[in-house]
Image (cartoon, rainbow, N blue to C red; front, top):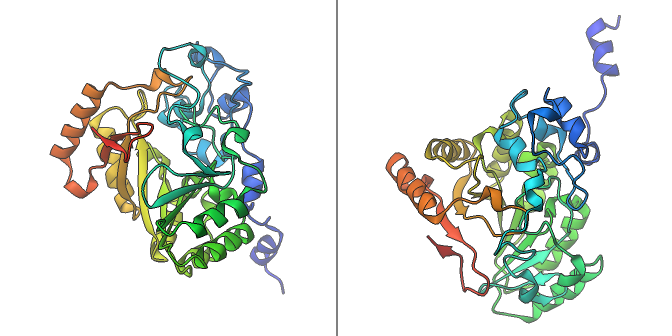
Length: 338
């Protein structure tokens, strides 16, 4: 006799794939606010039709937001506001001068020994402070055909020891595409490390599968994943599980945050973030001063305030939990420590 519980198991729908979850991401401001029990009138500066840089937020990220709170630190990172349209002196479309760093189509070189491969221009989340929010793929030579030329350039330059996969988000490539890229890197003898900059483990945790962990762990190159988390609230149970899977596979995990007004601009919030990251197997790495990208000036924190926050963190945390406060300066040989 078949039991009722077995019947229920047989008819239960399969969990959504990460691709399905990406496809169901919210793109409508009104729908996002409704999901949080918020009225547009609660946010007077709301820009409900931000066509130049549209809203994009996975439902799994929305699930981490606080219903009814128009000042939620996760909501603030993604909600378009009219203040973004203000023209502020010094805030430009390419604040880190990526266009000047093009080494080959889709390949950037800013620092010794490393190159950055733009794997895709797509992201799973549109951060309102993104320094590439005005990115024009043609300006960097990005196309569906640029990978082979970029890899040929990497193979010719024996001074390179590390390749960084960025974008967009490189984990929006599927496992087959990543397998091809890693196989090509494995054949370049002077490479030692592959670094992946991604928000997928925390935005859509189901992207982190045993197959992906095995793929990365079996590479000849030492794998490093740098995630981007700005607030401890972003690290729920599913996110922690995904990160711990990667850590168990022997993958080094680092985090870089951006210092953002109204999101993480107090020492208690930053200390809680560092503690939570470490609980998840991630080491705090960089705390970036905001790149002055057009549309994001309202997130800016002064250097004086940032340094005071850093001093407060040093007084609260062991040294290994204090991220390095840095700014990217176009043309500089390294990130500039503050």
